[in-house]
Amino acid sequence: MRHDSGLPKVLVALWLTLNVACARSGSRVVPVAFKPCAMAGVGAVDSSWRQVKAPGFTFCVPGSWEPTGAGSDTLDPSHWKGREGFVRWHLGRPQSMSSQPRMAEVTGTVSSGGMSPPPPPPIPSPATRPDASCPPPTNTPFMVDRVVVVVTQAACSGIWTTTAWSTAPEIYIQGEAQSAANAMLLNAIVVTIRFAPVRR
Figure 1 (cartoon, one colour):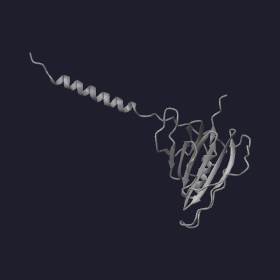
Figure 2: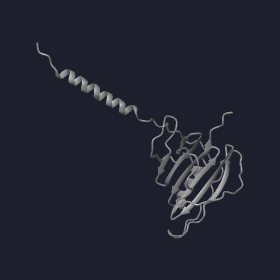
Figure 3: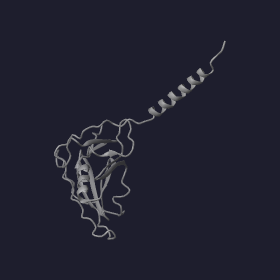
Figure 4: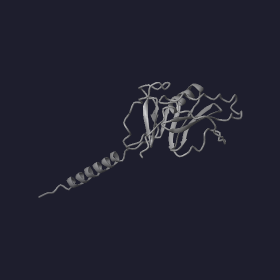
């Protein structure tokens, strides 16, 4: 009687192939499902925008923008990019408010504005020459969901940087654009920040 020794080798190869395939597919992180931004009357935001979920807060980006990193089961990726520019969210305090780090003092009047979203802050004017010293950043505080958010904007060497940050909770979103028109889109993004209710 003759035994075919090739059959066990085929079964072992099939078993190894399935294990490798299953291990690869199980390691992928499933992103949070697309959730339309449900904000009305906030600049260019409409139903084509998507909500980005971060720890303790959300904000919205244009629907055409794509993530450039991985998310988790419960959080969206922290980096988003479109042809107009990019934004990223982080926990903690921003290390820099612009491409040219500076010290700045934040002063201003915080207004609650009721339930309507705050108006976007004005766009800073760009530096006239790429090698010109950069004008100081502007700071515009506003209140949303009982949290003070400061929008710091800087324009230097043809790059507009917008940073919306809070100290309680310590979070920020920061974006860059290469034109004043695209910087206005960053303004529309930062005024969509909403905070999760604090459990007491």
